[in-house]
Length: 99
Image 1 (cartoon, rainbow, N blue to C red):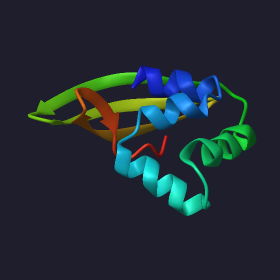
Image 2: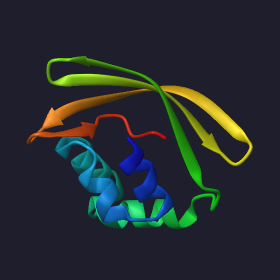
Image 3: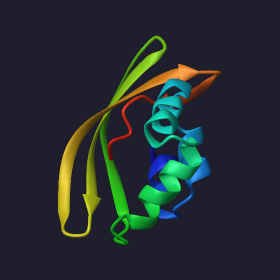
Image 4: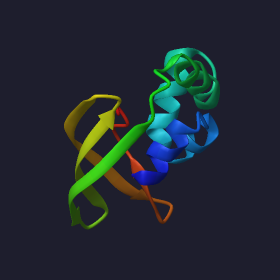
């Protein structure tokens, strides 16, 4: 989770695409008509320049799936979220990266 937030803060589209599931990366690519990286470069380039912070409150692992309850902070706003991950190719990857 922290790697995903750091990659977003660094505007590193390639790293972000590598931290989501293959299915999610394909969905992002199809929605943009290009690659995951190109789509996220546009999104990250237009994003609020405020740094995003994450505070992990709880982690629940059930086999190849995990849920992370966290508070996402950006600027003066914060929002509690539950983030789903699955183990894919030996790595934990986000299934819903709507942070």
